[in-house]
Length: 239
Image 1 (cartoon, one colour):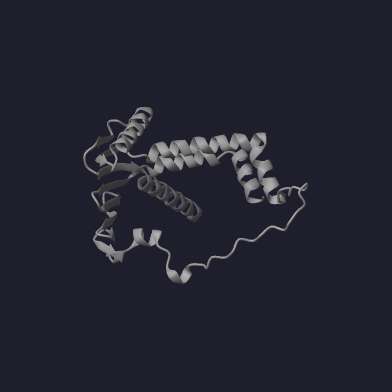
Image 2 (tube, rainbow, N blue to C red):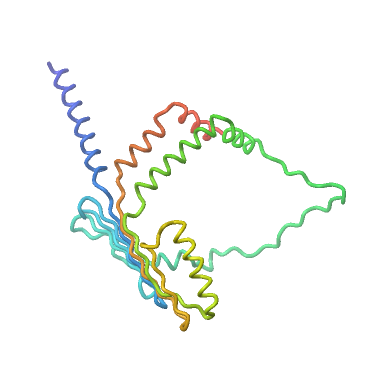
């Protein structure tokens, strides 16, 4: 009797974990990005989860970035963040001094140095180019396409006015935009207006979407559930 109760409790715990996983992954992660440029860039990026019980906001304005992470009513890490500035700036103390490029040893005019391929590179090349490897790579790219389709924004709107110093350059730039807009069918989402009299760049972007974790999990499980895929992954690890 005791063994039966233990089995029932274990099954109930497993069922609870499965239900919890389904609930947590079925709720999408929503994100939005709003940005503008009029001589100075401003960025507002927001992420929310579980009906905004977990939310994150990053704002870049006047050359400074501010991040705000909240879980329920608790505020976590409300300090200033200079993320965008630090990405493009390397501190002086970690900059490596420039070293002269090593000079190759002189060779005879008739001799040409032959590139040597290491054994690891040869093994990796063999794994990726054989029939099994090509089939697995196609499956991986198919899964990546599915995931990209899941996470891609549902709403994209970009508007702006562009005028360069030379009207000819403005016309060339807008001509390239019209060609790309026709190819990718984004005329409704991206609308740019030329200004041939003034040198000006004004842009506004509004991007919104959601990420369904459950669908991404299913796509990944479908990709890695097959034994050939596991064999391919192990071959890559052991190279």
